[in-house]
Structure formats: structure tokens, C-alpha cells
Image 1 (cartoon, rainbow, N blue to C red):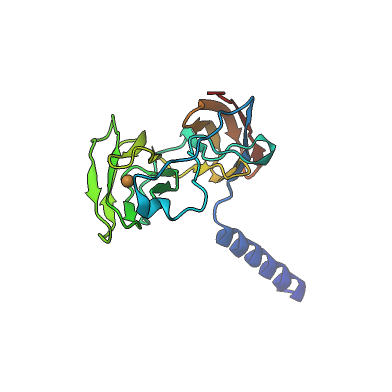
Image 2: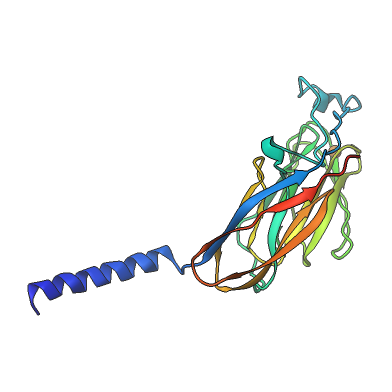
Length: 236
Ligand SMILES: [Cu+2]
């Protein structure tokens, strides 16, 4: 083999290794969630019945049913592949939901069917966490301060409203999903769904108060697709 051929063979090997390291090429769907119209003003939460939590705030936190950012961006929208992707096995890491300052952090938590869900109580008071499941088994559990995290699983896909039976202002959502292709819009409304194999997909965007929207799209290879969702704000 000539010297030139050796160099070319080496380059081919290097290129092949780089592709293997990067993993299978997939498409990426990203975009922004916004609203049009005027959202209802979120009220400050009155925590005076729970002084251990109330004292954690200099100004009362706002209800989080609708959380917006600049440029009409809409936060806490679950954007996920609702059709076209096979069901995925649950990942080994746990999804974490924390009760802190008598609020749920995060307000909307997405995780997969049969993935471990760890629920922490960081407060000096007892909470009674109550996921209002209809498809999955409904339960409620008391969690006194200083107790270890609760470990739970949900066997079926479902959007589950969550409330606290002690503190009526505490509410959130568990989005239990069938596959790993999901994201929750950040404060700038942005979301990204990476590593989508070639295929036809339905992308669904879900918001606690504004409902759901869907868009169909096709991924052919490793392209980047932009998908935006605009929700109509409810003024009440
Ligand atoms: Cu509570």
C-alpha cells in the first residue's frame, strides 16, 4: 500500500469512529410556546394558615396555573411525541418532585410509565400528597417533615393533577408519558426534542389551563425542524 493510501484508510477509520461516537443521527424538533390574548392575572397565595411556609417568602408567591415570560412566552407546557414513536422502557434515574415552601417544585413534572418518582418533603410541616389519577390507581399519602422520600410509580400514561389535602393552594401535574421524547417549555417558551429517528410523528403540546394542540411532522434524517405552538389565553 502506498503512503497516500495508508493516510486515506486512516481518515476513513477516523470518520467512522467519530460517527459511532456521536451515536445514530436523528432529527431535532425545537420551537417556542407562546400565547395570544391576555392571561388571567395570577393571584398571590395566602399561606397565613401555614406560618412555617409563609415566613419563607418576603412577598407571597403567585399561583402557577399560568406562568409567562417576556414576548408572550408560555412556561410549563409539556411538549411530547404522542404518536409515531415506540414506547420506551423507563430510564433508571428517578424523577424528583419536591414540596418546598408549601409549593410543588417543579409545578409540572414529566416522567415515563414505570419510572421511579421520588417525592421529597423539604418543609417543616406535614403534606398529604394526593395525585387525582383516573386511569392509574388513585392514592394519597401523608409525609411528615424529616421523613425519607416517597417512592412511587405510575403504570399507565396519564396527565394527573396533584394536590395537597392539607394546603388547598398546593397543586401541580404529573405528566406520565409512554416514551422519552418530551420536554417542558422553559420561561422563554423554548423546548427541544432531540434524537428523533426518521419517521412520522404527532407532537402534542399540553397546558394545564389552555388545553392541548397537536402538529404532525416527518423526520427524514438528521434535520432540525422548527415547530411553534400558540395558545389562546383565558382571561379568567
Ligand atoms: Cu401541603
